[in-house]
Image 1 (cartoon, rainbow, N blue to C red):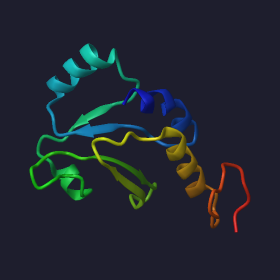
Image 2: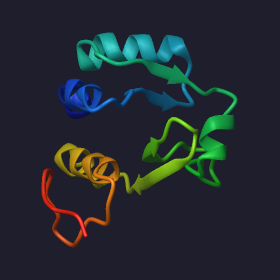
Image 3: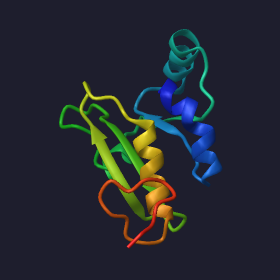
Length: 119
């Protein structure tokens, strides 16, 4: 989550709102953010009822929230989703590239880079 926080200003500059969601309580979040993370520069929402995690398909059969990333457009349509295994970290550079590709307005070829031509 610290890496996402470091990239949050770039996401925001691209018109993207950044927030985290977990099934823990707001009190657990507060303690975790203050003790282990030393702060967080984006909101962390509590989904104790698990409705959001369930609706986005990131709630396991054991009722554990999986790590996922979603880009949702202004109409509420999920344009990108990725669920990560516990032992695989998120790559913020790739997430920024993916968001830029979604915003590019064309078909982005393999190995497309931000600012590159679309098809």
